[in-house]
Image 1 (cartoon, rainbow, N blue to C red):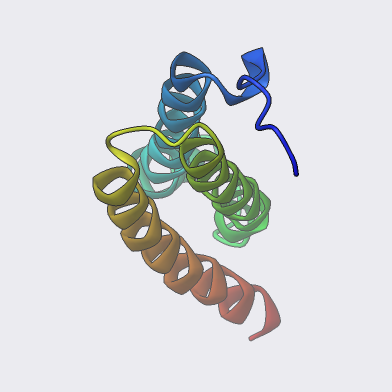
Image 2 (cartoon, one colour):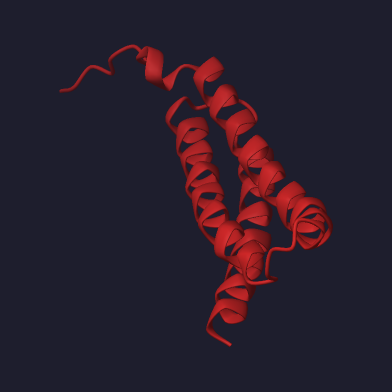
Length: 109
């Protein structure tokens, strides 16, 4: 017979909410860089178009990891909003996967 231990601080709902916020910030920074900074600022600075994908691909991968960790935290904390937050995270992960694959295609071709 096992006794469920109290959730640790790592599994607390506030930690899960913090992880969700972090994942959305990283995803937002990636989009900000990809759609505003790279297309408009880099050409003004005379940098090649390949710099954008070279920078946004790793940022996209980091954002995917943060979104995955967010889902994990919400489920471990048994947070009341785990289903809606997981849905948002999965949609963001899908978009990030699509964009990151596009970055790798740009780099390869």
